[in-house]
Image (cartoon, rainbow, N blue to C red; front, side, top):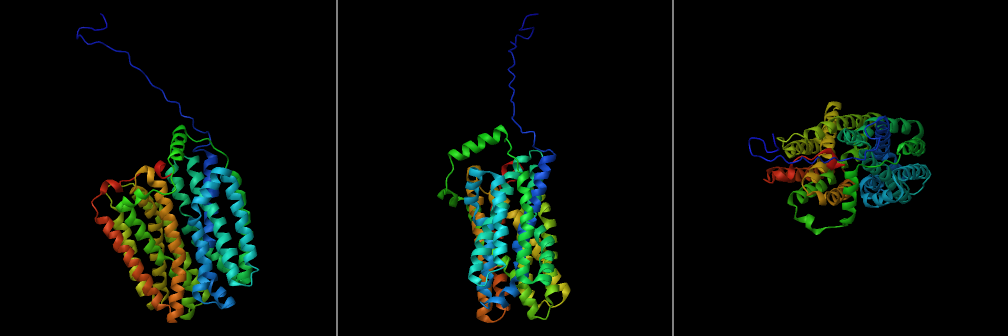
Length: 434
């Protein structure tokens, strides 16, 4: 029989194309999980010390007598460092690598905490704890999000979910540590002990071995480097992104304000300082547990996640308005649980929503802008709340302000959920997030 056969069809040779991917042997192996574990430990320690400033806040107030607003700025500036230094840290990472940036960041944190334990002026704490510790912690925290996904391919989404638990895990694990140190050694001794604990975590930097990325990742990095822009005004044409970013800014302007002032507020209500400090465990635990669930729900196509975000923030705004009337232990626990649930839902969900709302080329710029604005709002909120409390000589107007801000943020999230551009909110893969 000839090639045509009985049918009269000519059989053409089939061309087989093979693709060889250059995958590092370190990916998805035992060393990858060691890197992930080191990153989680680093994030838990750094975020724990950053978000536990509220436990030390009353002592700082009494020591320097500079008022609630000025004293709150110390912790606010440090909190802002986790996100505001992102562009600079990214450039340093490209120049020196993950190991160097993480190690130097740890040393800066340890030195700044040790120096803070000796300061005699509140404004000097703006430099030592606010700026220096904020910059060092930003170097540690942000590098984990850059380097850890490169060690994973199959389990990349899971690794991102684990390191995202840093803030919740930090409050859950480190706030009792900070409180116990404060009881035993005072606020100065606590800062010195924190310096020692942070210095130990410098060991984690040495597990960040250089790793050869996949061939497709190399191509993406090359393309992004060619077309990289500091700012593209076209991003403002993305209505969903703009609305989500504004909603996040307004929401975070009020979100962290109560927790920073909570210990002093409860002391004024006759609640013992030790009991008030223990309440942070509830918010840390709930924030820790809810983040992986929110990440998983984002992969379910038929769920509009903005309904969930709106419910979380709506409940939080209600309990914020009711907080001045919370006097029983159960009511206080309920507030911290609700705060933790909202913190985990928004902290994990909004960055994903920002990424989903943008074309691929605009996503790095969009997530950078969102992080900077949300961190700036998180820093300004507690100081603004302290100013309101100082002027009114009461924390009640401050809680009303917080409730109003969270209500406004909730309304914007509801507006996003009602928009019909469902294609811009479709889930993305873990590889795109990385």
